[in-house]
Image 1 (cartoon, rainbow, N blue to C red):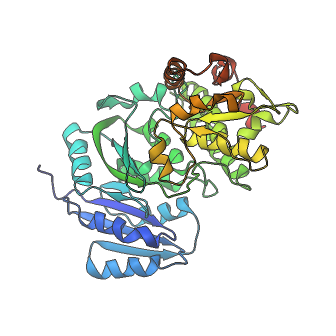
Image 2 (cartoon, rainbow, N blue to C red):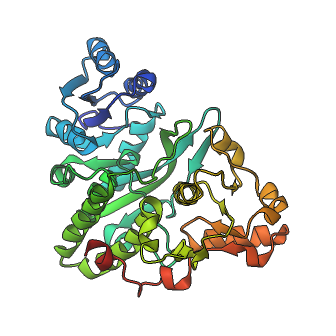
Length: 403
């Protein structure tokens, strides 16, 4: 595979207290088959051994630049990195993840061969001994940005983020990226990637979506990533306010994007602040699922981000009592320390719960799960998914949330 060696890629690595993972991360970048790299390690005020590891690697490889700065969060670290980036192209790797040896060679080849403004790849999620590939929701190929924008955040299937929002799964042109990265509000601590990616795509002319995965997102054990943490409500709201401002100022796509933002806000609240929908209900909970009586025994199916959110919410209302929780990939999640059981066990134990909440955001996925569970013996009146009223475009949650 031939590439123009004049095309420098600046790789920005934000780092905060990831000493157990950092050596593998940096080694995987140094070992890239594409060598014309600037490797920017941004130590964002780490209090563990991460800063020492960064400096040690700098002594071994002249391509490495290290920034030591006070802790300011992920947005702040990425800004510090892009301000010294010299490459025509920019990529990101999180300090606890790692990449395949040909990751940036492949992405640069897609970029140049197809003459596009951004490359999007698939990725892996790694558990302890298992790894699963996360597929794109679009077929591979070259797209005009305008063909992706109408379904970028979600489509009629109520998918959350049809275009993967992650910065680390993409290669960007610095000339387009820098202003979008630099203007992001540093108070945003939820959806930092989204704030950059979707603004970038609105300006991009073309995008290539590759049938290739070379990035390994490391899922830590006992992880409840995506679940709302106390004190973060205003930071979550900051993201929606920021995106609303960006979309309102885009003359061509404003109407389309604000409609999608309304749907995305529903998805974000399901993942981060599900209690928002129950704030006016005293005797019922989980109103997006039709409203369930407070005294009901509720089980959860689905161990993704939405499943984690629903599980934690129900558990907190039950005073910490364990909730029956299932997923077809139960063995993967068990490696992460999560109490997930198999679909077969969910059905065998159905007398122990009144309702099984199908905690996925995709209508098609939910229907597939329901069909499979019913066929295997689940009572049809036991299951609940999001109501048609909730997923409808006519349900305006955006105005209510930002009021």
